[in-house]
Image (cartoon, rainbow, N blue to C red; front, top):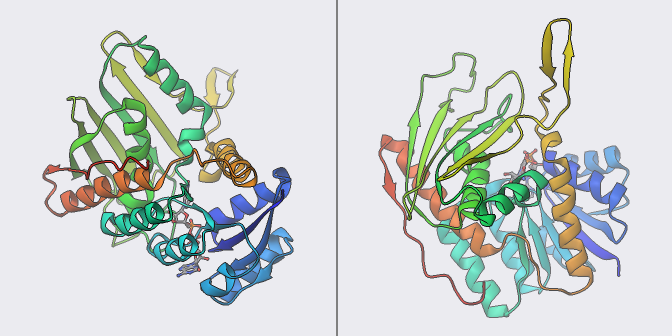
Length: 337
Ligand SMILES: NC(=O)c1ccc[n+]([C@@H]2O[C@H](COP(=O)([O-])OP(=O)(O)OC[C@H]3O[C@@H](n4cnc5c(N)ncnc54)[C@H](O)[C@@H]3O)[C@@H](O)[C@H]2O)c1
């Protein structure tokens, strides 16, 4: 079966997914697209040469002959198409975050449960990254003992969007660490604290405080610090190191070759954020499409994972207001997930 997709939002990440689907995924076709701005939809078609119908509303797109909706619009525009897709019993791949607050996540969870079918996969693609998967295997093997503490770095050369504000550091960037850390530790978060370090004078965005440090504490006591910047200048740099009772597991510093030449040891680091997780983007979409095509239950990050991330992100944004720790509490996980 060829899965017919409707795409909502035609910006940067949509381009990555469209090119991947066109080149690598034979059993999927993007048949319809919609963007709030017609020019964005037209440009995507022009640049990627996909043969898709341009729709003029979410309703028009959902009523097309499609099997699944792919949501790549901005964070605050995910809720409406997700609820409409569930109502029409369509599968959904939505970019992270599921939505940008926990209250709206609960509406999605209630709608999905009432349809009694898992329809949603959230684009927390790091779970598909082979290096994070190896870290998880290592941690579950017990080789490093119980995890005690950790360090993460999430640096982007320049802000990802023109509307990037202080809070976006959480819902656009740190949300990836929120998702991957509880997946790696297999533990819930207890509290979170965001602190602002010295302002980077190269940050030209007045509405963004940069850099920020997030301290997250788990229920079993482990603590992880994450250093966040949207103005690294030198490149897109993601690191994760977990220290256990008996050893350490960490991502490779940069998954690229090392060159020794002329009294120097060097490695390339890309400025473009789309490159580091290129394989993960491919694998998450492949998994989603294959499961939809075979009508198998979805396996990737769920609405419940989206909810966990949103509760934690809400607490982090609250902490940004006075830089004090904020306690986190979650609802009971429904049996459905
Ligand atoms: N998984 C990842 O690594 C990753 C990376 C980048 C972005 N994202 C997520 O993808 C989404 C899009 O990010 P982006 O970087 O492509 O942003 P972008 O600004 O490049 O593109 C967003 C697009 O959505 C459109 N849009 C805005 N409001 C809309 C609405 N109400 N209905 C339809 N279209 C609307 C805009 O016109 C724009 O074309 C965000 O949720 C972001 O968090 C995920």
